[in-house]
Length: 236
Image 1 (cartoon, rainbow, N blue to C red):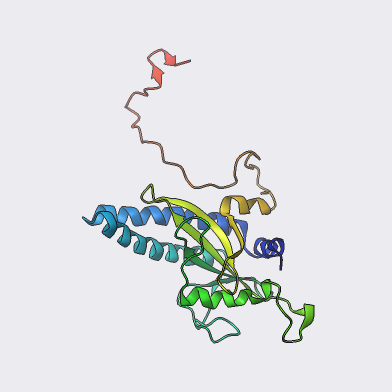
Image 2: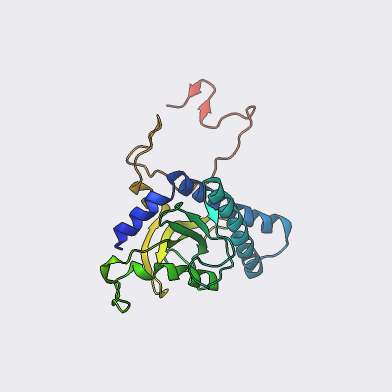
């Protein structure tokens, strides 16, 4: 499959609203992990960052599974990759019904667009991507071989400059040898592949459909004067 064909499979299988909710969940859980360690421990420096990283992944893993189930994803039964004897130990959520679909997992990246650390679960998952790249026809199947499910990861990288923030959330497909990405796009750019929303309100073309949340505005009580207004009305 080409990169475009892989992308088409993902777009046809994963609902647009799922990706929006997964992005929102990732951002919220990252912030939750930061606040949990900051407000409930006296750890600082490397110790605080290490514990926050563990909390962030576990919180995001739970949010990932709940969000996928909300949008029709099914967690694999038996903790074994279908058609293999390879076991996995993280939530893998399947989309696609009776047709070849997508097995979706979660992984953190050391930095943006960098392969996540290998573990037994991801190494088992990428075996599904064996037929996504051209290879010698040693089994005599010719060009009729069609890939079944493909293994896709929701990837995130923390922002090292700001606690509780993410630098990037992306969709990635890793090759069966775990050497590189066959496809990789941030959620923001990937969303452009979906048909425009049919709702009454649509986002302007000049603005991304979805983006990481900016710093919230400071709350101002109603009784506190607005510094941007004078006693005679708005400042021109």
